[in-house]
Amino acid sequence: MEKAVFKSDINKPEELLAEFFASAPYFSEEDKSRIQEAWDYYISLCGNEPEAYVHVLRVALILAGNKLDADTIISAILHNALSDEVKPEDLEKKFGPAVSTIVAGAAKISFFSKASNTSFQADSIRKMMFALSDDVRIILLKLADRLDKMRHLKKYAEEDQRAVAKEVIEIWAPLADRLGMQAEKNELEDLSLKYTNPDVFQQIKAIVSQKQDERSAYLESAVNKITEQAKKLNIEVTISSRAKHFYSIYQKMKKRNVEAGELYDLLALRIICNTTTECYTLIGIVHEMWSPLDGRFKDYIAMPKANGYQSLHTTVMCQGRPLEIQVRTKEMHNMAEHGVASHWLYKKGTNKDNVTESQLGIFNQLQELKKNNFSDDGFFNELKNDLLKDEIYVFTPRGDVIHLPQGANAIDFAYAIHSGVGEKIVGAKANGKIISLDEPLQNTQIIEVLTNPQAHPTEAQYKIAKTSKARQRIHSWLTQNNVDFFDERKVEKPEDEQKKVHHRPKTKKKSGEEENVPKVEKIKIGNTSNFIFSFAKCCEPKYPEPIVAYLSRLKGMVIHSKNCYVYQRIRNKDERSLDVDWDAPKEK
Image (cartoon, rainbow, N blue to C red; front, side):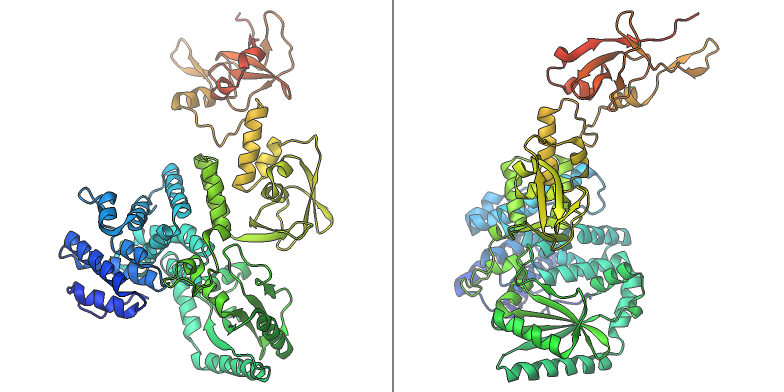
Protein backbone atom coordinates (compact mmCIF):
# COMPACT_ATOMS: atom_id res chain seq x y z
CA MET A 1 0.00 0.00 0.00
CA GLU A 2 3.01 2.24 0.43
CA LYS A 3 3.69 4.51 -2.53
CA ALA A 4 5.06 7.95 -3.25
CA VAL A 5 2.49 10.65 -2.52
CA PHE A 6 4.18 13.49 -4.39
CA LYS A 7 5.61 13.33 -7.89
CA SER A 8 7.82 16.38 -7.36
CA ASP A 9 11.49 16.23 -6.39
CA ILE A 10 11.52 15.95 -2.60
CA ASN A 11 14.65 18.09 -2.50
CA LYS A 12 12.68 21.04 -3.91
CA PRO A 13 10.25 22.29 -1.23
CA GLU A 14 8.66 24.91 -3.50
CA GLU A 15 7.67 22.30 -6.08
CA LEU A 16 6.21 20.10 -3.34
CA LEU A 17 4.02 22.92 -2.03
CA ALA A 18 2.89 23.81 -5.55
CA GLU A 19 1.82 20.19 -6.04
CA PHE A 20 -0.02 20.31 -2.71
CA PHE A 21 -2.00 23.38 -3.79
CA ALA A 22 -2.81 21.70 -7.11
CA SER A 23 -4.21 18.71 -5.19
CA ALA A 24 -6.23 20.94 -2.84
CA PRO A 25 -7.49 23.85 -4.96
CA TYR A 26 -10.12 25.12 -2.51
CA PHE A 27 -7.97 27.70 -0.66
CA SER A 28 -8.30 31.46 -1.13
CA GLU A 29 -5.24 33.50 -2.12
CA GLU A 30 -5.00 34.80 1.44
CA ASP A 31 -5.01 31.25 2.80
CA LYS A 32 -2.38 30.18 0.29
CA SER A 33 -0.19 33.03 1.43
CA ARG A 34 -0.50 31.97 5.08
CA ILE A 35 0.19 28.33 4.25
CA GLN A 36 3.21 29.39 2.17
CA GLU A 37 4.51 31.41 5.13
CA ALA A 38 4.12 28.42 7.46
CA TRP A 39 5.86 26.14 4.94
CA ASP A 40 8.80 28.51 4.53
CA TYR A 41 9.05 28.86 8.31
CA TYR A 42 9.13 25.09 8.85
CA ILE A 43 11.67 24.58 6.07
CA SER A 44 13.92 27.12 7.81
CA LEU A 45 13.60 25.14 11.06
CA CYS A 46 14.29 21.63 9.76
CA GLY A 47 16.84 22.63 7.11
CA ASN A 48 17.81 20.14 4.45
CA GLU A 49 15.82 17.21 5.85
CA PRO A 50 13.35 16.13 3.16
CA GLU A 51 11.98 13.26 5.26
CA ALA A 52 10.89 15.75 7.92
CA TYR A 53 9.13 18.26 5.69
CA VAL A 54 7.66 15.70 3.28
CA HIS A 55 6.00 13.97 6.24
CA VAL A 56 4.24 17.11 7.48
CA LEU A 57 3.07 17.94 3.95
CA ARG A 58 1.66 14.43 3.56
CA VAL A 59 -0.24 14.92 6.82
CA ALA A 60 -1.53 18.25 5.53
CA LEU A 61 -2.67 16.56 2.31
CA ILE A 62 -4.65 13.94 4.27
CA LEU A 63 -6.45 16.74 6.10
CA ALA A 64 -7.00 18.63 2.87
CA GLY A 65 -8.79 15.54 1.60
CA ASN A 66 -11.48 16.44 4.15
CA LYS A 67 -11.32 20.07 2.98
CA LEU A 68 -10.29 21.32 6.40
CA ASP A 69 -9.65 24.99 7.03
CA ALA A 70 -6.35 26.82 6.58
CA ASP A 71 -5.59 26.90 10.32
CA THR A 72 -5.69 23.09 10.42
CA ILE A 73 -3.44 22.79 7.36
CA ILE A 74 -0.94 25.26 8.83
CA SER A 75 -1.03 23.33 12.11
CA ALA A 76 -0.25 20.13 10.21
CA ILE A 77 2.78 21.73 8.61
CA LEU A 78 3.97 22.98 12.00
CA HIS A 79 2.96 20.03 14.19
CA ASN A 80 6.61 19.04 14.74
CA ALA A 81 7.90 22.60 15.07
CA LEU A 82 7.83 23.04 18.85
CA SER A 83 11.24 22.85 20.53
CA ASP A 84 13.38 24.63 23.10
CA GLU A 85 13.69 27.47 20.62
CA VAL A 86 10.11 27.49 19.29
CA LYS A 87 7.31 27.92 21.85
CA PRO A 88 3.52 27.99 21.38
CA GLU A 89 3.55 31.76 21.97
CA ASP A 90 5.94 32.14 19.04
CA LEU A 91 3.49 30.34 16.77
CA GLU A 92 0.63 32.44 18.09
CA LYS A 93 2.43 35.64 17.15
CA LYS A 94 3.15 34.41 13.65
CA PHE A 95 0.06 32.36 12.79
CA GLY A 96 -2.65 33.14 15.33
CA PRO A 97 -4.17 31.55 18.46
CA ALA A 98 -5.96 28.69 16.67
CA VAL A 99 -2.75 27.34 15.16
CA SER A 100 -0.93 27.69 18.48
CA THR A 101 -3.70 25.81 20.32
CA ILE A 102 -3.87 22.96 17.80
CA VAL A 103 -0.10 22.46 17.59
CA ALA A 104 0.40 22.68 21.37
CA GLY A 105 -2.54 20.34 22.01
CA ALA A 106 -1.27 17.79 19.50
CA ALA A 107 2.23 17.92 20.99
CA LYS A 108 0.89 16.88 24.41
CA ILE A 109 -0.49 13.59 23.10
CA SER A 110 2.09 10.83 23.27
CA PHE A 111 1.76 7.68 21.24
CA PHE A 112 2.00 4.51 23.30
CA SER A 113 4.24 2.45 21.00
CA LYS A 114 6.15 -0.09 23.12
CA ALA A 115 5.29 1.48 26.48
CA SER A 116 3.51 -0.97 28.76
CA ASN A 117 3.10 1.27 31.80
CA THR A 118 -0.61 1.42 32.58
CA SER A 119 -0.49 4.85 34.24
CA PHE A 120 1.39 6.26 31.24
CA GLN A 121 -1.24 4.88 28.89
CA ALA A 122 -4.06 6.26 31.04
CA ASP A 123 -2.37 9.67 31.08
CA SER A 124 -1.98 9.57 27.29
CA ILE A 125 -5.66 8.74 26.88
CA ARG A 126 -6.59 11.52 29.28
CA LYS A 127 -4.64 14.09 27.27
CA MET A 128 -6.04 12.82 24.01
CA MET A 129 -9.64 12.89 25.20
CA PHE A 130 -9.35 16.32 26.76
CA ALA A 131 -7.72 17.63 23.61
CA LEU A 132 -10.67 16.22 21.70
CA SER A 133 -13.09 18.12 23.91
CA ASP A 134 -11.08 21.35 23.53
CA ASP A 135 -10.80 21.41 19.74
CA VAL A 136 -11.63 18.45 17.52
CA ARG A 137 -9.01 19.60 14.99
CA ILE A 138 -6.28 18.51 17.42
CA ILE A 139 -7.43 14.91 17.11
CA LEU A 140 -8.04 15.20 13.37
CA LEU A 141 -4.40 16.26 13.06
CA LYS A 142 -3.18 13.37 15.22
CA LEU A 143 -5.29 10.91 13.25
CA ALA A 144 -3.77 12.15 10.00
CA ASP A 145 -0.30 11.94 11.53
CA ARG A 146 -0.89 8.36 12.63
CA LEU A 147 -2.37 7.39 9.27
CA ASP A 148 0.71 8.71 7.47
CA LYS A 149 2.95 6.77 9.83
CA MET A 150 0.96 3.58 9.16
CA ARG A 151 1.28 4.14 5.41
CA HIS A 152 5.06 4.29 5.80
CA LEU A 153 5.49 1.75 8.60
CA LYS A 154 7.56 -0.64 6.50
CA LYS A 155 10.78 1.23 7.21
CA TYR A 156 10.51 0.60 10.98
CA ALA A 157 11.76 -2.48 12.87
CA GLU A 158 9.28 -5.37 13.10
CA GLU A 159 8.84 -4.94 16.85
CA ASP A 160 7.93 -1.28 16.36
CA GLN A 161 5.61 -2.15 13.49
CA ARG A 162 3.61 -4.54 15.66
CA ALA A 163 3.50 -2.13 18.60
CA VAL A 164 2.26 0.79 16.49
CA ALA A 165 -0.24 -1.41 14.62
CA LYS A 166 -1.63 -2.73 17.92
CA GLU A 167 -2.05 0.80 19.22
CA VAL A 168 -3.86 1.80 16.04
CA ILE A 169 -6.38 -1.04 16.22
CA GLU A 170 -7.05 -0.42 19.92
CA ILE A 171 -7.20 3.38 19.96
CA TRP A 172 -6.97 5.28 16.70
CA ALA A 173 -9.20 3.25 14.37
CA PRO A 174 -12.05 3.12 16.94
CA LEU A 175 -11.61 6.84 17.59
CA ALA A 176 -11.87 7.55 13.85
CA ASP A 177 -15.06 5.48 13.87
CA ARG A 178 -16.52 7.48 16.77
CA LEU A 179 -15.76 10.66 14.86
CA GLY A 180 -17.59 9.25 11.83
CA MET A 181 -14.48 9.17 9.62
CA GLN A 182 -15.08 5.85 7.89
CA ALA A 183 -12.43 6.13 5.17
CA GLU A 184 -9.68 6.79 7.71
CA LYS A 185 -11.02 4.10 10.05
CA ASN A 186 -11.08 1.46 7.29
CA GLU A 187 -7.58 2.24 6.09
CA LEU A 188 -6.17 2.26 9.63
CA GLU A 189 -7.75 -1.14 10.29
CA ASP A 190 -6.44 -2.64 7.06
CA LEU A 191 -2.93 -1.33 7.61
CA SER A 192 -2.96 -2.58 11.19
CA LEU A 193 -3.95 -6.07 10.02
CA LYS A 194 -1.11 -5.97 7.49
CA TYR A 195 1.46 -5.72 10.29
CA THR A 196 -0.22 -7.65 13.12
CA ASN A 197 -1.29 -10.64 11.01
CA PRO A 198 0.53 -10.46 7.65
CA ASP A 199 -0.30 -14.04 6.59
CA VAL A 200 -4.04 -13.49 6.91
CA PHE A 201 -3.72 -10.09 5.22
CA GLN A 202 -2.04 -11.63 2.18
CA GLN A 203 -4.60 -14.46 2.09
CA ILE A 204 -7.51 -12.01 2.06
CA LYS A 205 -5.77 -9.84 -0.53
CA ALA A 206 -5.40 -12.83 -2.84
CA ILE A 207 -9.05 -13.86 -2.40
CA VAL A 208 -10.33 -10.33 -3.08
CA SER A 209 -8.12 -9.84 -6.17
CA GLN A 210 -8.91 -13.15 -7.86
CA LYS A 211 -11.75 -13.53 -10.37
CA GLN A 212 -12.02 -9.75 -10.79
CA ASP A 213 -13.66 -10.07 -14.21
CA GLU A 214 -16.34 -12.41 -12.86
CA ARG A 215 -17.01 -10.08 -9.93
CA SER A 216 -17.14 -7.01 -12.15
CA ALA A 217 -19.74 -8.63 -14.41
CA TYR A 218 -21.82 -9.67 -11.40
CA LEU A 219 -21.80 -6.19 -9.88
CA GLU A 220 -22.38 -4.47 -13.22
CA SER A 221 -25.49 -6.59 -13.75
CA ALA A 222 -26.86 -5.61 -10.32
CA VAL A 223 -26.08 -1.93 -10.88
CA ASN A 224 -27.85 -1.92 -14.25
CA LYS A 225 -31.00 -3.47 -12.78
CA ILE A 226 -31.19 -0.91 -9.96
CA THR A 227 -30.48 2.00 -12.32
CA GLU A 228 -33.20 0.83 -14.71
CA GLN A 229 -35.84 0.61 -11.98
CA ALA A 230 -34.82 3.97 -10.47
CA LYS A 231 -35.08 5.63 -13.89
CA LYS A 232 -38.66 4.42 -14.26
CA LEU A 233 -39.51 6.34 -11.07
CA ASN A 234 -37.48 9.41 -12.12
CA ILE A 235 -35.02 8.91 -9.26
CA GLU A 236 -31.50 10.11 -10.01
CA VAL A 237 -28.93 7.74 -8.49
CA THR A 238 -25.19 7.25 -8.39
CA ILE A 239 -24.12 3.68 -7.69
CA SER A 240 -20.63 2.51 -6.77
CA SER A 241 -19.44 -1.04 -6.14
CA ARG A 242 -16.63 -2.28 -3.96
CA ALA A 243 -15.15 -5.24 -2.15
CA LYS A 244 -15.35 -4.91 1.61
CA HIS A 245 -12.17 -3.74 3.30
CA PHE A 246 -9.77 -6.40 4.51
CA TYR A 247 -10.24 -5.94 8.25
CA SER A 248 -14.03 -6.35 8.04
CA ILE A 249 -13.47 -9.61 6.11
CA TYR A 250 -11.03 -10.70 8.81
CA GLN A 251 -13.66 -9.98 11.49
CA LYS A 252 -16.18 -12.10 9.57
CA MET A 253 -13.63 -14.93 9.38
CA LYS A 254 -13.14 -14.87 13.14
CA LYS A 255 -16.86 -14.59 13.90
CA ARG A 256 -17.85 -17.47 11.61
CA ASN A 257 -14.62 -19.47 12.11
CA VAL A 258 -14.06 -19.90 8.38
CA GLU A 259 -11.35 -19.13 5.84
CA ALA A 260 -11.63 -16.08 3.59
CA GLY A 261 -12.36 -18.32 0.59
CA GLU A 262 -15.46 -19.68 2.35
CA LEU A 263 -17.03 -16.23 2.68
CA TYR A 264 -19.45 -15.12 -0.01
CA ASP A 265 -20.73 -11.76 1.21
CA LEU A 266 -17.57 -9.84 0.33
CA LEU A 267 -19.19 -7.44 -2.11
CA ALA A 268 -21.20 -4.27 -1.55
CA LEU A 269 -23.06 -1.61 -3.54
CA ARG A 270 -23.63 1.95 -2.42
CA ILE A 271 -26.57 3.90 -3.84
CA ILE A 272 -26.53 7.70 -3.52
CA CYS A 273 -29.75 9.64 -4.12
CA ASN A 274 -31.15 13.10 -3.34
CA THR A 275 -33.80 12.75 -0.63
CA THR A 276 -34.65 10.61 2.38
CA THR A 277 -37.93 9.56 0.74
CA GLU A 278 -36.00 8.27 -2.25
CA CYS A 279 -33.82 6.20 0.09
CA TYR A 280 -36.83 4.24 1.32
CA THR A 281 -38.26 3.93 -2.19
CA LEU A 282 -34.98 2.50 -3.47
CA ILE A 283 -34.68 0.00 -0.63
CA GLY A 284 -38.20 -1.17 -1.57
CA ILE A 285 -37.10 -1.59 -5.18
CA VAL A 286 -34.10 -3.64 -4.10
CA HIS A 287 -36.23 -5.91 -1.91
CA GLU A 288 -38.69 -6.46 -4.77
CA MET A 289 -35.90 -7.55 -7.10
CA TRP A 290 -33.99 -9.75 -4.66
CA SER A 291 -34.97 -11.53 -1.45
CA PRO A 292 -33.56 -9.81 1.66
CA LEU A 293 -31.78 -11.94 4.26
CA ASP A 294 -33.50 -12.07 7.66
CA GLY A 295 -32.11 -9.74 10.27
CA ARG A 296 -29.79 -7.92 7.87
CA PHE A 297 -31.87 -4.77 7.26
CA LYS A 298 -30.74 -1.82 9.38
CA ASP A 299 -32.31 1.62 9.37
CA TYR A 300 -29.61 4.08 10.41
CA ILE A 301 -31.62 6.96 8.94
CA ALA A 302 -34.42 6.74 11.48
CA MET A 303 -31.90 5.65 14.12
CA PRO A 304 -28.53 7.34 13.38
CA LYS A 305 -25.36 6.02 14.98
CA ALA A 306 -23.86 8.07 17.80
CA ASN A 307 -21.24 9.42 15.41
CA GLY A 308 -23.94 10.92 13.18
CA TYR A 309 -23.82 8.19 10.52
CA GLN A 310 -27.04 7.71 8.52
CA SER A 311 -27.79 5.13 5.84
CA LEU A 312 -30.04 2.18 5.03
CA HIS A 313 -28.31 -1.22 5.02
CA THR A 314 -29.61 -4.48 3.62
CA THR A 315 -28.21 -7.78 2.38
CA VAL A 316 -30.01 -9.60 -0.45
CA MET A 317 -29.54 -12.84 -2.37
CA CYS A 318 -28.54 -11.73 -5.84
CA GLN A 319 -27.80 -14.45 -8.42
CA GLY A 320 -27.29 -17.00 -5.67
CA ARG A 321 -24.86 -15.04 -3.51
CA PRO A 322 -25.22 -12.42 -0.75
CA LEU A 323 -24.88 -8.79 -1.79
CA GLU A 324 -24.78 -5.95 0.74
CA ILE A 325 -26.43 -2.70 -0.37
CA GLN A 326 -26.31 0.71 1.30
CA VAL A 327 -28.65 3.58 0.38
CA ARG A 328 -28.12 7.18 1.49
CA THR A 329 -28.50 10.80 0.36
CA LYS A 330 -25.60 12.97 -0.76
CA GLU A 331 -25.61 14.79 2.59
CA MET A 332 -25.59 11.49 4.48
CA HIS A 333 -22.74 10.28 2.29
CA ASN A 334 -20.76 13.41 3.06
CA MET A 335 -21.25 12.77 6.75
CA ALA A 336 -20.34 9.10 6.34
CA GLU A 337 -17.12 9.98 4.53
CA HIS A 338 -15.95 12.94 6.62
CA GLY A 339 -17.74 12.58 9.95
CA VAL A 340 -17.12 15.42 12.37
CA ALA A 341 -14.59 16.82 9.90
CA SER A 342 -17.54 17.85 7.72
CA HIS A 343 -18.29 20.56 10.30
CA TRP A 344 -14.92 22.12 9.46
CA LEU A 345 -15.35 22.13 5.69
CA TYR A 346 -13.54 25.10 4.26
CA LYS A 347 -16.60 26.74 2.66
CA LYS A 348 -19.14 27.08 5.45
CA GLY A 349 -22.69 26.41 4.34
CA THR A 350 -21.85 23.72 1.81
CA ASN A 351 -22.32 21.03 4.42
CA LYS A 352 -25.48 22.59 5.92
CA ASP A 353 -23.79 22.11 9.28
CA ASN A 354 -24.79 18.44 9.31
CA VAL A 355 -22.94 17.80 12.54
CA THR A 356 -21.33 19.73 15.32
CA GLU A 357 -19.26 18.47 18.22
CA SER A 358 -22.16 18.93 20.63
CA GLN A 359 -24.28 16.52 18.56
CA LEU A 360 -21.86 13.63 19.04
CA GLY A 361 -22.08 11.50 22.19
CA ILE A 362 -18.32 11.36 22.57
CA PHE A 363 -18.13 15.13 23.16
CA ASN A 364 -20.96 15.13 25.65
CA GLN A 365 -19.26 12.36 27.64
CA LEU A 366 -15.98 14.25 27.67
CA GLN A 367 -17.54 17.52 28.74
CA GLU A 368 -19.24 15.73 31.65
CA LEU A 369 -15.90 14.18 32.53
CA LYS A 370 -14.18 17.55 32.68
CA LYS A 371 -17.05 19.08 34.65
CA ASN A 372 -16.67 16.40 37.32
CA ASN A 373 -12.89 16.78 37.43
CA PHE A 374 -12.67 13.06 36.79
CA SER A 375 -9.01 12.04 36.96
CA ASP A 376 -8.66 8.50 38.28
CA ASP A 377 -6.60 6.25 36.02
CA GLY A 378 -8.86 3.24 36.49
CA PHE A 379 -11.96 5.16 35.47
CA PHE A 380 -10.10 6.64 32.52
CA ASN A 381 -9.39 3.14 31.26
CA GLU A 382 -13.09 2.35 31.62
CA LEU A 383 -13.97 5.58 29.83
CA LYS A 384 -11.62 4.53 27.03
CA ASN A 385 -13.63 1.34 26.71
CA ASP A 386 -16.93 3.27 26.80
CA LEU A 387 -15.83 5.53 23.98
CA LEU A 388 -13.92 3.16 21.76
CA LYS A 389 -15.71 -0.18 21.89
CA ASP A 390 -18.65 -1.19 19.69
CA GLU A 391 -21.97 0.28 20.73
CA ILE A 392 -25.64 -0.65 20.81
CA TYR A 393 -28.77 1.45 21.01
CA VAL A 394 -31.82 0.64 23.11
CA PHE A 395 -35.10 2.43 23.77
CA THR A 396 -36.87 3.78 26.80
CA PRO A 397 -40.62 2.94 27.03
CA ARG A 398 -41.27 6.47 25.71
CA GLY A 399 -39.20 5.76 22.59
CA ASP A 400 -36.09 7.77 23.52
CA VAL A 401 -32.86 6.30 22.20
CA ILE A 402 -30.03 5.46 24.60
CA HIS A 403 -26.58 4.66 23.15
CA LEU A 404 -24.45 2.29 25.25
CA PRO A 405 -21.22 0.36 24.74
CA GLN A 406 -21.65 -3.27 23.79
CA GLY A 407 -21.92 -5.42 26.90
CA ALA A 408 -23.74 -2.76 28.95
CA ASN A 409 -26.59 -3.88 31.20
CA ALA A 410 -29.71 -2.45 32.84
CA ILE A 411 -27.70 -0.70 35.56
CA ASP A 412 -25.71 1.17 32.90
CA PHE A 413 -28.97 1.98 31.12
CA ALA A 414 -30.52 3.38 34.31
CA TYR A 415 -27.55 5.67 34.99
CA ALA A 416 -27.51 6.76 31.34
CA ILE A 417 -31.07 8.04 31.84
CA HIS A 418 -30.34 9.80 35.14
CA SER A 419 -28.25 9.18 38.25
CA GLY A 420 -31.42 9.34 40.37
CA VAL A 421 -32.90 6.46 38.37
CA GLY A 422 -29.70 4.45 38.67
CA GLU A 423 -29.56 4.84 42.45
CA LYS A 424 -33.09 3.44 42.89
CA ILE A 425 -32.98 0.54 40.39
CA VAL A 426 -34.08 -2.85 41.73
CA GLY A 427 -34.96 -4.65 38.49
CA ALA A 428 -35.52 -4.27 34.76
CA LYS A 429 -37.60 -5.52 31.83
CA ALA A 430 -36.50 -5.99 28.23
CA ASN A 431 -39.38 -6.00 25.73
CA GLY A 432 -41.79 -6.60 28.62
CA LYS A 433 -39.92 -9.54 30.17
CA ILE A 434 -37.99 -9.45 33.44
CA ILE A 435 -34.21 -9.69 32.95
CA SER A 436 -31.36 -9.93 35.45
CA LEU A 437 -29.47 -6.73 36.09
CA ASP A 438 -26.20 -8.19 34.84
CA GLU A 439 -27.63 -9.45 31.52
CA PRO A 440 -26.04 -7.68 28.51
CA LEU A 441 -28.60 -5.60 26.63
CA GLN A 442 -29.26 -6.23 22.95
CA ASN A 443 -29.70 -3.81 20.08
CA THR A 444 -33.18 -2.23 19.72
CA GLN A 445 -34.59 -3.65 22.98
CA ILE A 446 -37.14 -1.56 24.89
CA ILE A 447 -35.83 -1.35 28.45
CA GLU A 448 -37.99 -0.51 31.45
CA VAL A 449 -36.29 0.23 34.77
CA LEU A 450 -37.99 -0.93 37.98
CA THR A 451 -37.22 1.30 40.97
CA ASN A 452 -37.87 1.43 44.69
CA PRO A 453 -37.61 4.69 46.68
CA GLN A 454 -35.89 2.78 49.53
CA ALA A 455 -33.21 1.29 47.27
CA HIS A 456 -29.63 2.50 47.06
CA PRO A 457 -26.43 1.52 45.18
CA THR A 458 -24.68 -1.67 46.32
CA GLU A 459 -21.27 -3.25 45.98
CA ALA A 460 -22.85 -5.98 43.86
CA GLN A 461 -24.08 -3.36 41.40
CA TYR A 462 -20.65 -1.76 41.34
CA LYS A 463 -19.08 -5.08 40.36
CA ILE A 464 -21.44 -5.74 37.45
CA ALA A 465 -21.79 -2.19 36.06
CA LYS A 466 -19.85 -1.73 32.81
CA THR A 467 -19.92 1.97 31.91
CA SER A 468 -17.66 4.51 33.55
CA LYS A 469 -20.61 6.77 34.40
CA ALA A 470 -22.47 4.05 36.30
CA ARG A 471 -19.36 2.82 38.08
CA GLN A 472 -18.27 6.34 39.01
CA ARG A 473 -21.71 7.24 40.41
CA ILE A 474 -22.01 3.98 42.38
CA HIS A 475 -18.45 4.33 43.63
CA SER A 476 -19.11 7.88 44.78
CA TRP A 477 -22.25 6.85 46.67
CA LEU A 478 -20.57 3.88 48.34
CA THR A 479 -17.55 5.93 49.35
CA GLN A 480 -19.78 8.52 51.03
CA ASN A 481 -22.34 6.17 52.59
CA ASN A 482 -20.72 2.79 53.20
CA VAL A 483 -17.60 2.87 55.34
CA ASP A 484 -17.04 -0.84 54.66
CA PHE A 485 -16.77 -0.33 50.92
CA PHE A 486 -13.43 -1.53 49.62
CA ASP A 487 -12.51 -1.12 45.96
CA GLU A 488 -9.58 -3.47 45.40
CA ARG A 489 -8.86 -2.00 41.98
CA LYS A 490 -8.36 1.50 43.32
CA VAL A 491 -6.23 0.77 46.38
CA GLU A 492 -2.51 0.62 45.79
CA LYS A 493 -0.70 -0.15 49.02
CA PRO A 494 2.89 0.91 49.60
CA GLU A 495 5.40 -1.87 49.02
CA ASP A 496 6.01 -2.44 52.75
CA GLU A 497 2.25 -2.62 53.31
CA GLN A 498 1.99 -5.29 50.62
CA LYS A 499 4.51 -7.36 52.49
CA LYS A 500 2.67 -6.98 55.77
CA VAL A 501 -0.63 -7.92 54.23
CA HIS A 502 0.25 -10.81 51.97
CA HIS A 503 3.07 -12.57 53.76
CA ARG A 504 2.61 -14.47 57.02
CA PRO A 505 5.19 -13.47 59.65
CA LYS A 506 7.90 -16.01 60.27
CA THR A 507 10.00 -16.82 63.29
CA LYS A 508 13.29 -18.64 63.88
CA LYS A 509 13.92 -21.96 65.60
CA LYS A 510 17.05 -22.20 67.81
CA SER A 511 18.59 -24.23 65.04
CA GLY A 512 18.22 -21.25 62.72
CA GLU A 513 15.56 -22.89 60.49
CA GLU A 514 12.45 -20.92 59.57
CA GLU A 515 8.92 -22.07 60.30
CA ASN A 516 5.49 -20.50 59.99
CA VAL A 517 3.97 -19.11 63.13
CA PRO A 518 0.84 -20.87 64.49
CA LYS A 519 -2.42 -20.18 62.67
CA VAL A 520 -4.69 -18.27 65.07
CA GLU A 521 -8.37 -17.86 64.13
CA LYS A 522 -9.80 -16.38 67.34
CA ILE A 523 -9.64 -12.94 68.94
CA LYS A 524 -10.34 -11.65 72.43
CA ILE A 525 -11.38 -8.42 74.10
CA GLY A 526 -9.77 -8.34 77.52
CA ASN A 527 -10.16 -11.89 78.80
CA THR A 528 -13.31 -12.66 76.81
CA SER A 529 -13.18 -14.59 73.53
CA ASN A 530 -15.58 -16.53 71.27
CA PHE A 531 -16.81 -13.37 69.56
CA ILE A 532 -18.49 -13.59 66.16
CA PHE A 533 -16.40 -11.64 63.67
CA SER A 534 -14.91 -11.69 60.18
CA PHE A 535 -11.46 -10.85 58.87
CA ALA A 536 -11.24 -7.86 56.53
CA LYS A 537 -10.53 -8.97 52.95
CA CYS A 538 -8.52 -5.84 52.27
CA CYS A 539 -5.67 -6.75 54.62
CA GLU A 540 -6.33 -10.36 55.74
CA PRO A 541 -4.55 -9.92 59.10
CA LYS A 542 -2.39 -12.80 60.32
CA TYR A 543 -1.16 -13.59 63.79
CA PRO A 544 0.81 -12.00 65.47
CA GLU A 545 0.53 -8.61 63.73
CA PRO A 546 -1.37 -5.91 65.71
CA ILE A 547 -5.10 -5.87 64.99
CA VAL A 548 -8.18 -3.73 65.65
CA ALA A 549 -11.91 -4.42 65.51
CA TYR A 550 -14.23 -2.17 63.50
CA LEU A 551 -17.97 -2.36 64.25
CA SER A 552 -19.65 -2.33 60.85
CA ARG A 553 -23.35 -1.56 60.54
CA LEU A 554 -23.67 -4.18 57.81
CA LYS A 555 -21.09 -6.82 58.67
CA GLY A 556 -20.77 -6.67 62.43
CA MET A 557 -17.28 -6.94 63.93
CA VAL A 558 -14.61 -6.79 61.24
CA ILE A 559 -10.96 -7.39 62.15
CA HIS A 560 -8.35 -5.25 60.39
CA SER A 561 -4.61 -5.01 60.72
CA LYS A 562 -3.83 -1.83 62.66
CA ASN A 563 -1.63 -0.79 59.75
CA CYS A 564 -4.33 -1.52 57.16
CA TYR A 565 -4.41 1.15 54.48
CA VAL A 566 -8.16 0.84 54.01
CA TYR A 567 -8.92 0.95 57.75
CA GLN A 568 -6.85 4.10 58.14
CA ARG A 569 -9.04 5.82 55.53
CA ILE A 570 -12.38 5.09 57.27
CA ARG A 571 -14.01 8.29 58.46
CA ASN A 572 -14.85 8.44 62.19
CA LYS A 573 -13.24 5.03 62.62
CA ASP A 574 -12.26 5.79 66.24
CA GLU A 575 -15.91 6.02 67.27
CA ARG A 576 -16.62 2.48 66.04
CA SER A 577 -13.34 0.72 66.85
CA LEU A 578 -12.39 -1.63 69.69
CA ASP A 579 -9.01 -2.76 70.97
CA VAL A 580 -8.69 -6.50 70.43
CA ASP A 581 -5.94 -9.09 70.52
CA TRP A 582 -5.31 -12.55 69.19
CA ASP A 583 -6.66 -15.38 71.33
CA ALA A 584 -3.49 -17.41 70.91
CA PRO A 585 -2.78 -20.65 72.79
CA LYS A 586 -0.51 -20.16 75.76
CA GLU A 587 3.03 -21.41 75.37
CA LYS A 588 3.85 -24.51 77.42
